[in-house]
Image (cartoon, rainbow, N blue to C red; front, side, top):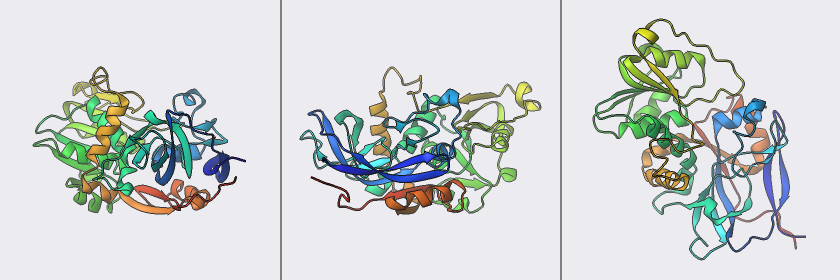
Length: 332
């Protein structure tokens, strides 16, 4: 028998389990990575866990190293930081980020991992996929110097966008959410906070991440004439309702989508996805992102933890998954 690892699988919508999975021998151009920490991408993984991926999106929403098919059984996830145990000399012993599901050890092509800068702690590095999405969004709709910006939805993605947008000189950024406790997070990120009914209008750019019809409507309402609402939410199979009366036509408002699957057109000819991810990891030198790491649990507890995250019984911005340092299941 060869070496085995442990992986989290969605057996069927709403039910997860830990499975033993075989590890194949790596080729010369591959690496063996022992996971140090992974994280739950709460929005997308909640939809996957609930079986809410529309059949028309099964192919589009595949994760890079997904096993199985929607709605299940499926092994899904894409925020993973680990240590290269075996591989090319320049990677062996390095801490790397990979778009891999929750699994104790895995084998992937060497070019599928990105080295984590030494100044970025392992715990913070799991946010790389989130910050990469935020980078792509701001390439899709770049904020200009002095812009008035609102980010509606103070989840981990919205918070990441708010932090990056606030670094553009002269911008005024307001994080908008129905949860008043997110004011403390906004303060840690160096941006303003407002409840939806108190948010300042006249915005040049509004970024929406709440995945609710009410949030999208409020985003449009906050725009100045000829402003743009950038939609980052993914609703799965949920219907979305928005009123396009009022100022939408008279104000010549724009509504556009952004999604991380492809590099934004503005940079597609000059940046690869690997370069975009490397940039995200470099941006994570910023310790302000630590405020987004709000919970953690052991890998073996994921089958019990995931339903609590999905139901929001367990509140978290970014929920990290910790792993034992020693490989638990290995046989000769």
